[in-house]
Amino acid sequence: MKARLDAIIQREQAEYLDQLLTDADPLLAEMEKDAAENNVPIADREVAKFLAITARVSAARKALEIGMAIGYSVVHLARGMGSGSLVVTIEPDEERIRRASDYLNRANLMDGVRIERGKALEVMPRLNETYDLLFIDAVKEEYKRYLDLGLPKLRTGGVVIVDNLLWGGRVAKPSPDEDSSTVALREFNQYFISHPQLRAEVLSVGDGLGYAVKI
Ligand SMILES: C[S@@+](CC[C@H](N)C(=O)[O-])C[C@H]1O[C@@H](n2cnc3c(N)ncnc32)[C@H](O)[C@@H]1O
Image (cartoon, rainbow, N blue to C red; front, side):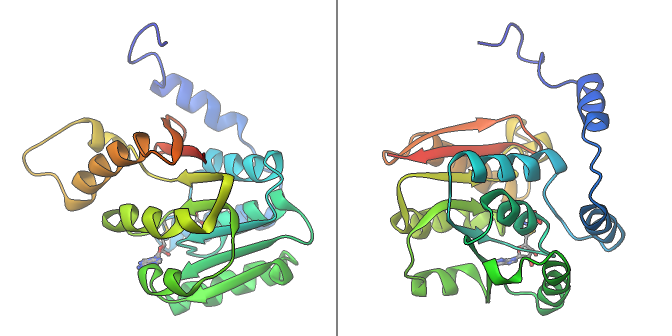
């Protein structure tokens, strides 16, 4: 249990942890720069690393990602899982798909990635594989439906990771004029934590990271 609620994570610690995360990989650095310059929302570095580590430690062979953007998290998942594995990722934005394909080709990962074009709620019902890992990172108001559609496709013992569950702190700070994403994420967190098919928690990693195993 935490000694104080605000013991983790204060600005000083966040800044310290940030400077520990220097990444030597030029492709990832280029993707981070591209995302920052073009306003593309991608996972925080520590979240992306967490994905790669979880993919490796859980020996995942097949992952489903909802929300690819330019492929930053896909690179981490695919590298974490290693050769012979598959990341299926869903993205509706053609320009982002074009840029992601370019990065994934340059990273030599395209053989292990299948991009599903379209909106997740339309694409997911026609996917019939079983996955070892599910990563949710698209429309916040749709998170509950992604989980409902994704869980039957996840094997028992499979991992669920969900990004942005603290939503810049807004989820933990009710206000009269909050946006629909904040409201949806607060409801989602309750649903996720108490889901009978999951052992779940929300970690203070990045923007708040849901982490669960299917039981
Ligand atoms: C936060 S970004 C994903 C970032 C990516 N996972 C990463 O960390 O590199 C969310 C993505 O979801 C996509 N998106 C928007 N609506 C969607 C939908 N209905 N289904 C699936 N993806 C959607 C957006 O175009 C955007 O690229």
